[in-house]
Amino acid sequence: MSAAPRPRPATSRRSAAVVVLLAVALAAVGWGLVLRHGFPHGDDWLHAMAGDQPGDARTVRGWLATWQFDYTYRNGRAADAAARLILLGGRPGALVVGVALMVLTGLATWPWLRMTVPHRPWPLVWAVLGLGVPFLAVQAHSWLTGEGLLWVSGMANYPLSTLAFLVAGAAVSGALPPRLTWLVLPVVVYAHVGHEVSAVATLVVTVLALVLRRPAGGRHRSTWAAIGASLLGFVVLATAPGLWRRTTEEDLALPLLQALSRTTLVFASLSLGWWLALGVLAVVAVRLSGRAPRRVAVVAAAAAWVLLLVARRRWPRLADLCADPDTAVPASLLALAVLVAAVVLVVGVLVLVVDAWGAVAAYPVVVLTAAGVVSAGVPVVASVCGQRVFFLPVTALVLAVACALRLVLDELAGGGPRTARAARLLTTAVTAATLVSATGYVAQTSQHAARNAAVYDAFVADVEAARTAGTGEVVVPELPEEGYAYRRAFYLARYACDLRLYYDLPDGVVLTDAERREDRTTDTTTGCETTWQRTLTRAAEQGPGRR
Image 1 (tube, helix red, strand yellow):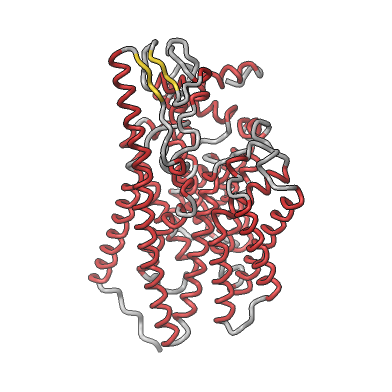
Image 2 (image 1 turned 180 degrees about the vertical axis):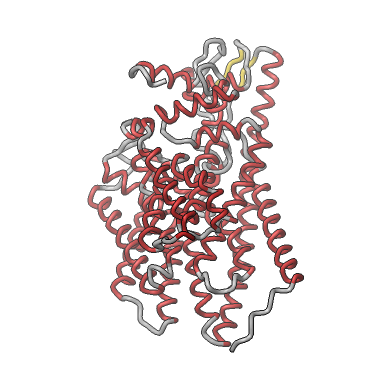
């Protein structure tokens, strides 16, 4: 009869808690150094001035009315309503919320990593690595930071939705304690009603959880409740009139084949390295088991990966041109080849993953990859051009790679003294690489974002001077680091009146852009119609009940 396991010493638990708290603190400092350079721009002014009268969203009644209008007409999602709440705190509030979101996203990776090898001890190092996953994900491209983090509207639409997806996915998978699962049921619903990308991703995990995890019995009531909340949330979003109205807009719509090829190449440009890592880890796992990997899957996935790499290098600015069907996409034959290559790559990698560990054992890898791939197709329906919409798919794929890495290292650790030593060395190397990479990201991004913030602060100083004088000209800036901000940050054709009202510019102060274009120059705030009011007018013209 084997001896009972010894209880973990209190000093050991305290040491572990100290390490975790230190890692959380360092992650918070890193995100703080990045996000302190954020500032309101783009739709932030739109949301700050939302309502029947500019700024009505600052009241409870007005905020609820704008949320209802989002659901029934604008886009169907609740993320913009969340952005309006964050904006009430100004730049300091946005900084605090942003840091909390990104640190919580790191913490939300823990259930997934624990789920990967549930019956083995939980090495402390994986807690640290989990906090590093969001840093690794946003390094895929500067636009994921600029469009996703450094303005409030992007922060509410993408990082917040990603966090909700990770929590909801863990809940429907039964990876959370029952009491915690009951507490996060509102988060499960929000993962759907908040944004269509997280809704699709969460639905994929919910369906696969039903197929692969099969919760049953009284002790799984909380998991069933999470699944029910997930299905309910998806129905609420899927029936939103605003969502369906938006998908019928044709101003950014492209032919389906072209739109799919553009979306595929943009996602490939952000994730090809992670697909390679996932495939390599699966092949290594098969080799560790003493078997040969499926040659057809390896060859097909490798050929598809190369084709996507070549296509991406041929059209590196595809996303920037997505509104122009004549120049934005490659020829139809190549567009079809891109789609076929993407399907072959995804199927090939998933075949290797399942061959290496089995669908049930590799559940986190399978569902995160599937959720990322399927949700990456949502921009086609939503007609969105920016890379920011791939924030969730890229994060899901990076976390899937981390889960696959844990499976490989666990197999090495259980293979004998020599392989166990190799596993420890590799784990140390991965931890060091993650810390170095995250530090490099913080240093580089802070430097670029600081230049944009300096230009914005100078713009605000000009606004203050003009408002005090009651006259003058204010030129909206061109940001020097384009990749670290929303592409249309100061787009006067849309935001001129929002800017004037947000900064309370008196009549007579001329607001113009750097090129002094007459069609984008304004000198009157009185009677100026905000973007929100123009949308209300358009809704009223389309029929009663829209407002």
